[in-house]
Length: 322
Image 1 (spheres, helix red, strand yellow):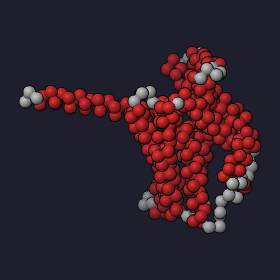
Image 2: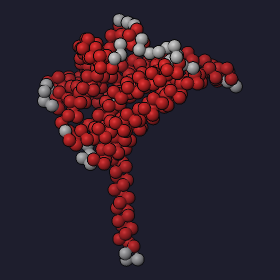
Image 3: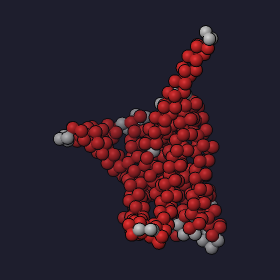
Image 4: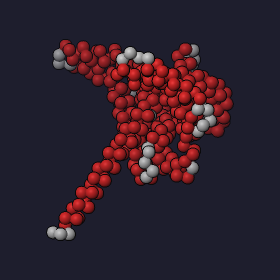
């Protein structure tokens, strides 16, 4: 009995450490997920286009294949690669994060530019074989997984930059949790969004009550508007998150801390002038996010000609795509 009590104490202590570790991982994963919100929203808004034009019975299998590719991107390629990079050359994480921020700014600004000056994407569509549905599905899935790799790299880099623990194991577990959770969240939402109009049609046709049938018809009518709102929010979030990442990186690397400091001062001043004290925190965040988004849009517009006239042709030459 005298030996059992110390053993129980040790087990209890280990249990407390394990519980604390789980709490730390959950907190770090939640913080990283919040930081990556802009990428997550845009990912959820972009992915449904990859199943557009296919038969309804192929939609969920296509989403499942893309989701599996996303998990492989995050856990097999990006997680070990980022951890090794952070261990060997940690100073590269912030520039890599800034590069991803620039990509977000470019993507967001390109969507704004496309909305203001619509233009066709014949060169992109020409790369897809629309005559063979099976071949087209393979190409669409491959293209979606490649796009996901870029967004996943940004999500995982943001998560790694957010994790404060020096423990290699804690970083790995947190990144894995973030990768799996965000993938399930994004593609679960995508599957629901894609099938929502089918659910609405089913309710409208087979609903047992008038209210149920009306709700089904409402879903069918509302989904295009929901997609438009989701796309708009995703674009705004990309510009806000991308601009914030770039500005914070310039401040953290001491390359040009002035914009970051000025936005902070303006946000604090505007919040201090707010008559409702309880709303000052929200006002400060809103002003900061708005100014970060403006900077992100300006940077993205500057990057459009670089991406389309320099990076795009070089990438086309390497991949032999139009």
